[in-house]
Length: 146
Image (tube, rainbow, N blue to C red):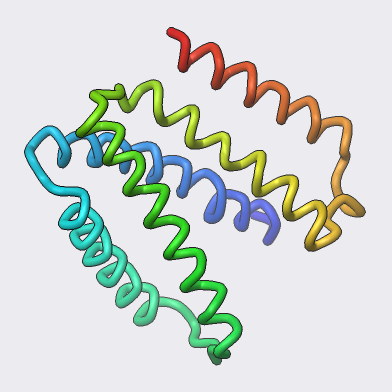
């Protein structure tokens, strides 16, 4: 298997599966009764366990303060988004089947920002990228309105 293909499997398909299943656990935990604060603390515990596993199983790279700051900013933003999903489930009885396609439109924000900040527009087929982005939006609207 080519290195790029392996990267797509490890960084694309496996996370899609894991993130998809995680939505079920979000709904299950809020249905079982958990405050948003304790929900996020339990999630943080799961992240710590996965961090230890990656520390033991992956090659070590040096860390910089700048890199750690970006990672902390990611964690803060991810925690806010995850807390908002839990709030929508608990306080507003929103169905996870409708929330998931909506919050997964975050990919479009990531695409636009990476095209701009990292100049990835130089290395992608913009026509196919735009067509795919439109399909994501149409699909999300259809599923959310179901």
